[in-house]
Figure 1 (cartoon, rainbow, N blue to C red):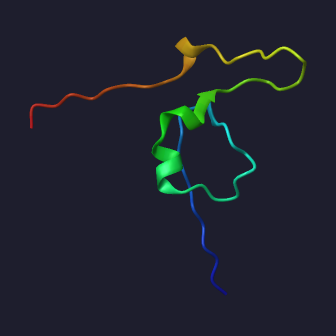
Figure 2: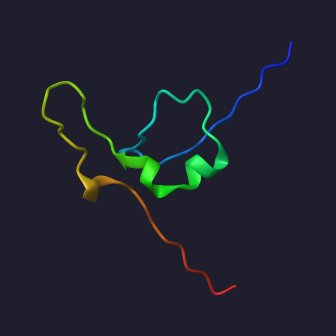
Length: 63
């Protein structure tokens, strides 16, 4: 049995806007407008994840 899996890693606190898409294309994943800060979706008002808590770093090397 063979199962194909596609995985996309995103930092904690960022979510893909279009959950209706079963498998987005590479172009859709690369487009920054398809991503947003994650929110709880529990109430009528969106409570977004604190943007300063998202662990994003830039590594600069001398090589």
